Length: 156
Ligand SMILES: [Zn+2]
Image (cartoon, rainbow, N blue to C red; front, top):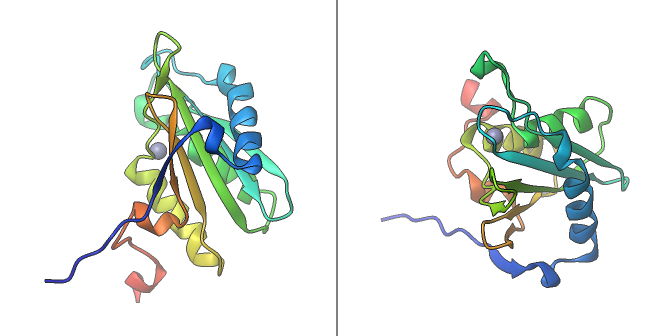
């Protein structure tokens, strides 16, 4: 029976790399821009590109619920909407209604979007996801988030 193994690290904040610390600071700095009056669940993401630039994003909810967008996609589309630079790392964090750390595990839709961009570059995209214990799940390759993902070759 074939199987797939998922490789990840589970790190304390103090074990994050300098780059990941920088992304964490940038994400924390924009959390206040989360528009989340319906869920009271604030999410912020920071994306590091190959040229060293960073795009941040926060979740943007809407009274017409499906019109909202996740923080990861806000950050990714801001990055890729202005640049062809490769994506090195995407970090995401969340805070609950009390402002406490919460699980910031990318939803399926965001995983699909990440894989679209991963397929365009020949280097893997790193993923850093904060959790409720203020620790971080770190994946060296986003494909471990979404095995058997749908991609352009699926359309041929
Ligand atoms: Zn999402």
